[in-house]
Structure formats: C-alpha cells, structure tokens
Length: 247
Ligand SMILES: *C/C=C(C)/C=C/C=C(C)/C=C/C1=C(C)CCCC1(C)C
Image (cartoon, rainbow, N blue to C red; front, side, top):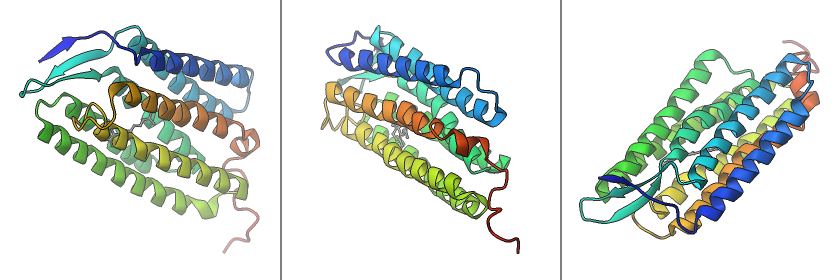
C-alpha cells in the first residue's frame, strides 16, 4: 500500500521553501520583537506560528521525511508528500484567524470557518491516500466543496463586518481577502492536475514548485502585508466606524 520513498529532483523546491519560510519567520520575529500592543502581539504570534510550522514541515520534506509511495489497485505508484497536510491542518486555520480577528468576527463564525477548513484538509488527505483514481477525484470534489462553502462564509462574514470597520481596516481586509481567495483556489487546481489527481498533467517536479510558491505567498506574503499595517492593527475596534453618526 504505502511505502517510504526518497525525494527526487523536486527536492530543490523544498529547500527553497524551507529557506523562504525561515526568512519569513525571522522577519516576523524581528519586527514583532518588543511590540507592546496586545492586538498587534496577537497578530505577530499567529504569523510566527504559521511560519514555524511551515518551516519545520518543509525542512522535513526536504530531508526526505513526510514522503510516501501510494500504490493504486491498478499498480500505479504515486509519490505523495503527506507532510503538507500536517502543515496545512494547522496553518490554514491560523491564516483564517488573521482575517477573522481583523474583522472582529464572533466565536461561532470563527469555529464554523475552522471546522470547514479542517474538514477540507482532512478530506484532501483521504483523497491523497485513496487507492482508486475515481475515489481520489470524489474526495477532491468533497474537499473542494468545503473550500467553496468556507469562502462563501468568509466573504459573508467580512462584508457583514465592513460597515463597523474603519476605512483603513476595511481596505486592508478586502485586499487580504482577495489575495486569500485567489491563492487558496489554486491549491485544488494544482492537486487535481498534479500527482495526486492521477491525471498527471503536472509532474511532481512542477507541482512541488507550484505548491512552494503558493505556500510562500499565502503565508509569508500574506503575513508581511498584514503586519506592515501596524497602525490599522493597533486601532482595531477602537473608534471603528466612529466617523459615521450613530443611527
Ligand atoms: C499555507 C497553506 C495554505 C494556505 C494551504 C491551503 C490549502 C488548500 C486551500 C487546499 C485545498 C485542497 C482542496 C480544496 C482539494 C484538494 C486537496 C487540497 C487539500 C489541496
């Protein structure tokens, strides 16, 4: 069924991912050092966690851990980097938390988003290990369905929050939301066209590069853009919407 495997030429992308995550982590640590504001510290903590987890999983994959061979019933053998799912299981809820806190979302909404997200990653993992192409595609469909519902809930939550946000917070939220939607929608596309989908349009080498670029942009790029806006993050919830008269 599943046997250990050694990384091939795609290893180069895993090392670049490892270095990129390390640099992102150091950047967040350096910039967050000595920050006193509670809200700001919270955002730094989240993004430091995200890059720490991603750095360790990339390092694991680059050094040959977290890769396995899955043999399908028809004899096809697929190289699957399962360590990605361990990374994503923890980092994607944290990235959603960034946006939820920015929009002052309530607890129920945060739990709903995280629940959908964990379901999405878990069903994707099942798909990655399924032994027949048809079931892999079915699980991909279920996971993608969860992603679409998640994005729908997210967009609804953020637009509901918009009127009570300051102009600066609203515009930051909307930029990050758009970035997240575009990047996150690319993951299932790479997956189904790559090794996991068995369709084989994208070989493992290119697939590993694509996930690396997506991961770096969705974690380090997204986090850096968020944390550049100290003024917005420190004034969250204070005087938001106060420019408009109360009705
Ligand atoms: C830092 C890592 C991020 C932002 C990862 C995001 C991952 C996804 C949105 C993955 C989604 C998937 C599907 C919707 C279906 C196929 C399996 C996945 C897990 C690739």
